[in-house]
Image (cartoon, rainbow, N blue to C red):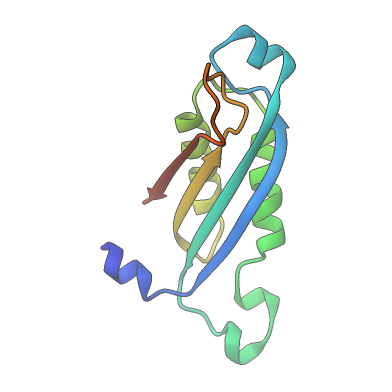
Length: 125
């Protein structure tokens, strides 16, 4: 799907899903953990939700958020690229979601200079 085509789809945007994870390449990151945050843009399949006003006709963003949180606090990976890819795969397995944009924030990344945040953004499929 082209980016222009995805922009015409309904979207759900969830920002700041936070959890403490043990992701990273360094021993102290794996041992001590740190906070990660994830932002999502869900591109939805056409639905009847606006007319039916029923949760069953749309995507339950509470359930999506729980899936993302579970991945953040779950099995550690070395790279935020891997974490983002796993989150995208998890989210895309939920019915009604055709495409997802995932941004993983690592505000406590081991960088030796002052900074605010490190973030990686991907869009799948």
